[in-house]
Image (cartoon, rainbow, N blue to C red):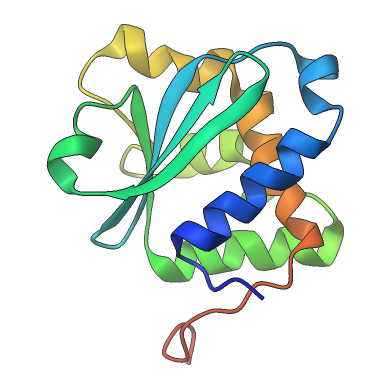
Length: 145
């Protein structure tokens, strides 16, 4: 049971996506996506038809990525619990909905042309997170307590 957030959790999600037929259906994806959970950051490197690597990074490296998805731990937990309960994100918890409903930017990046990868490959990123419905995810005890 990988804990969220952790490199093991992000890698388990990558392994599920890489083992699926999703890239055949959705096409190639070349981008370096960041995920920020409170003050922690991870890099997920999509290269052609696979998630090439996952690593924990610092804020300076996150600034160099194409974009970073930013939410609090509680917000990530709510999204992942919705995915687990429904097999995929439902309306309020899709990446598009989170981006549109957020008072602050959900997908953040310094260069708009690079941040556009979030919109261009959005369905692949959604699939990445939706695959986690197959994981038994644990969360820190303080989340949502």
